[in-house]
Image (tube, rainbow, N blue to C red; front, top):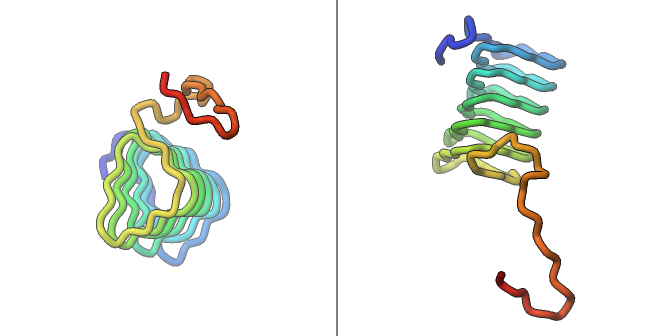
Length: 133
């Protein structure tokens, strides 16, 4: 992990935290966190790590478990032991064989952009074939 915004932070195994964390630096979680993490760095969830909440970061490597809302501005890397549930917004995704990915996923460079900028879909009438425009 790089020390872009300061010293990397670490939540060790057998440590449980309930609350919200905001930091400029990288984070490694080997314990359990119930809450939100917002960082301009990288989030790593170790093999024994677990987060239940919302995570906003630039990059993420996950070996452990995550449940909630995950917003990664660049690369999300899921190792073979990873288990992901919830919603994911990411620019790039790498998944090793064996990882469990049970999430609604949105991909693209515009991650974090307001939903209002998304194109509007026109509803079709019942029992009519869809028309291509």
